Amino acid sequence: MTVAELTLEVLGEKLLTQLDSKKFVEWAVNALKLGCESENLFILAGLDDEAAEEREKYFWKSVQDLDIEVARTEGELIYCYALMIADKAIKKEIGVDYAFSQMLKIVYASDYEHRYLPFFNINEDLDYIKYDNSIWITSGLTAENSKEFILEEFKIFVEMERLMIPCGERDKCYCERCKQLNTPLTKTKYQLRKPFKYLVWSCGFCRSDKVIFNSRHEVKRMIIEAFQQPAFHL
Image (cartoon, rainbow, N blue to C red; front, side, top):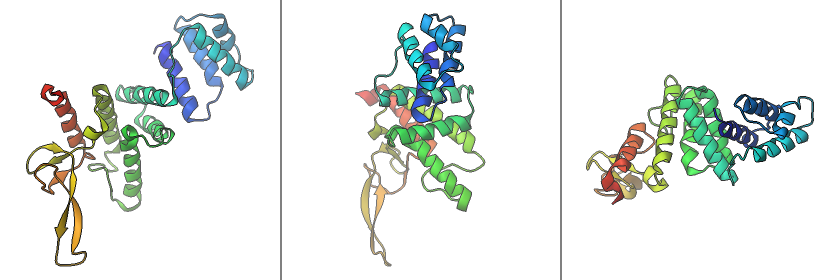
């Protein structure tokens, strides 16, 4: 781990939780182990019994001394931290349960930003599975496969961010009739019982209601694959 990653880890935890200021001291010790040096860094590494304000003051002085680039906005910090958490989970450097709990904090801290919502939906459906063995959104999720499912969601998240896939593309569904990814539209259907008229989602191309939504991992993989094709960007 680099000193920049160490710094991002501390700042991410500080943003999402009530950070124990001892983390600043641990950060300094680890930075020294990586070969970093500055007077303020040495001071911070020895502040075992000082107040939180004093530790944080020397933390920021050390960051400045070491010329560590930090996120300019809260949203940028959340985003960088989310990518780091996902990457660590994929590489098995941290547990899936811990990574998932951090992503849920990211959902709330980001005010439910679109790119993080799949993790919120998984958490909601895990509650439904627990109480009545049903799911509302996340197709394919079960109590037995939850860890593997979450890990796959981390992989998809990283790939979509690497490709910078726009939100509108991520929301596409797959039509089983015309075999195309599309933006779904509603259409009116009729029946001989109440309600006599109702709305259903349908394919944006052929208007079939045989659509599979992007809550399924296979559809998300189709979206990634389609976005990787050169013709997609023409």
